[in-house]
Each structure stands twice: as C-alpha cells, then as structure tokens.
Image (cartoon, rainbow, N blue to C red; front, side, top):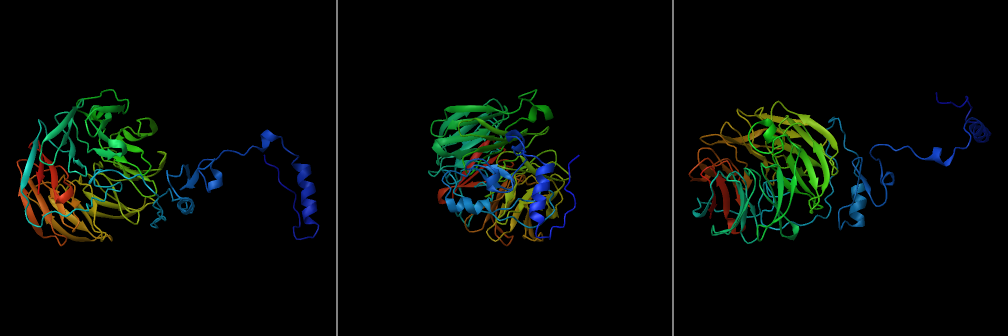
Length: 456
C-alpha cells in the first residue's frame, strides 16, 4: 500500500521545512534504477518524445521531411483528439510541407483526402470518344493520369497497362489475378497498384518493369473467390505526405517507398477502399466489417465508427476535418474528426460510391437506387439526379463544378451544380469505373465492355 504524509497545516511559515523533514524520513533517497520514469502510453507534449520526434494527438511522430521550425511548432500545439467520439469540434488542422506527386491525377479521387476535385475543365457539351483501349477484362480501375496525358489502369484480365493519350498501349504488366485497384503515381517515376493476387506491385511508370512486390496477409488462399480468398486482396493505394505508401487489404498497411513494412493494422475482414490521409496525418479506412477506422501515422487505432453494413467506398475528408463515406446500410455518413456522428442521409440502396466534395462544401455521392445525391454540409439534401440504373461509380468534379459519374445504364453523365443534366454519353457496357480528368479536359473512364474510354 502506498504511504501517505501525516496531516500538516500547510499555511504555517515553518510548513516547508517540516514537510521536507517528514518526506525524507518516510521516503528515503531512491537508487538510480528506482528513479527511472515509468513508461506510459502516448504523449501529452513534445518533451514526452525522444530526440526530434514531436507529440501529435497523443502519438510521438517524426516531423515530415522539410518541415520548417515554425510548422513543427504549430503542429505541436494540436491537442489530443477525443477517442470516444464525444465531440463535434474539429481539431486544428496544420498542413505541413508534403512530397509533391507527379501527374495530372496521381491518386484515386485526385488527392490524398479524396476530394474528387480536378483542376481541369471538361467540355460543357457532350464529348466525343477519341480513343478506346481494349483489354480482355472489365475495367473497373480508375486511371492515374500523368502530366503528358498517359493513363495507367488495371483490368480484370490480370494486367496493368500504360496508354498514350491517343490510346496506344505503351506497356502491359501481368499480375497474378484481377485488378480492381486504382494505381498511384509516386515520386521517382514509381507506380503502385494492388491486385487480387494479394500483392502490391511497385512498377517503373516509364517501362512497366517491376521494382518490387509486397504480399499482404498471410491468408490461406491467395487467389479465387469467397471471403477467405478475397480477404487479402490489395485494393486501394494512397501515398502520404511523407512518401509512405498506404494500402488496404486485410486491414491497413504502411510501407516505405522501398517496400519495407512500417506498420500493419490487421483485421479479420477485407478493406476495399483506398485509405484517405488527412492534412494532420490521420488515416481513414472503411472496411467490410461495417466500421470506419481512424489510425495514427504509425498505424495505431484512434477510434472506430460502426455502421449497419459493409463499407466498400473510400472516405473523403473535408476542409474542416469531417469524414464522409457510404455504407451498405443505404446511408451516406458524415463523422467528426473525433469519431462522432454528424449526420447520415438515407438513400434507397447501397452506397459504394466514394463521395466527392465541391469547393462550396457540397458532398456528392451515388447510390444503388440510381440517384446522385447532392448534400449540403449540414446534412440536408439539395437535390437528387436520377440515372436509369444503379450507380457504383464515384463522382469526379471538374474545375467549373461539373459532376461526372457513370451508371449501370451504360452512360457517363455530366451534371450541373444545380442538379440539371449537362450531357450524357452512351458507352457499350455498365460504367462502374470512376472517371478521371487529364490535361485539356480529357476524360478517361473504364467500363464493363472491357475497355478504357478516352473522350474529349
């Protein structure tokens, strides 16, 4: 039992000397080993961390490369975010210097927060197909676009391709199974893409040569169908501000650019969406156990938010830190940075569509009920645009606010910010792929007709 000091009248002038004498008698000097501080989890301030590491939301982390002293000092002022999801208050967000990524559309949903906003404007009238890149399988993968208009994408024919803007295939790289994943363009000419062979493939973007592979899992079966065979499929890839490669499979992984494991957040389910990375380094990931997970840069779980169905969409992070995502319980959710529900919009079908966030804060997402929903930041529905069949595709917003989205009625739609139809283009199969926009307003989108379509 811990010893206690006898009662002392602390207001007396002689109190300090008396307390000191009693303390020496009751607690004699300790050995050096006994004086060693007890290690506690997390941190409260920078001095709790070793060396140059700083305390951010109770985690000791390395300052990003190139961070200025002022930026590090600003980051250190962020207080720990609540872990119980008990507040609607958004933590202060500090954007630190980040490694720039190459290309007009280097990542799925354009950027690390998955805003879905492109700087390029597409035509206000229906575009024409200028090229079609044929494959031997469905093209669900949303392409990454280089600055010269080259498109990198995967196919269900177990391969990854690079196509020139005129549709000429520059190279093809086989994988061991279907490719649903959208690729990510990284520094140094790297291209990262996942496959159902349970591997993340790092390729040379110029030649398609394989630099390295990393295998998720282990799972008992690396290929095939069924929950166990699919659990370690590598789907979404995102590159963090410091160059860390994050991807989803049987949980979340963080790798160095050289393919070395930094962390693994393991689950007994599959996570299909690409992780989103907030400006403060928080990683958000939705999984097929019905949960949205918030992880620190080191992969430690901060909180989870449960829904009533699988989460197959990738989350998007708003400018105030709000996280938006869809679920198979037919709802589009908004959750605070602390993990509390802000609002949920009920649709009449699964929401596999990853939300896009307009500059005015409007959130767009599609539903299996065939609707494209426009939701204001307060959770009220501004309008709904109806396609003739289910929507699995995710919306992309062009530089003028036009919303592009595909549907299983074989059409690619362009919808004005007021919910009216701008134009639509009929393709030769379900348009489940998410459109990407390249230089000059060129549109790239995959479809179930086993092709990537290039329109302008």
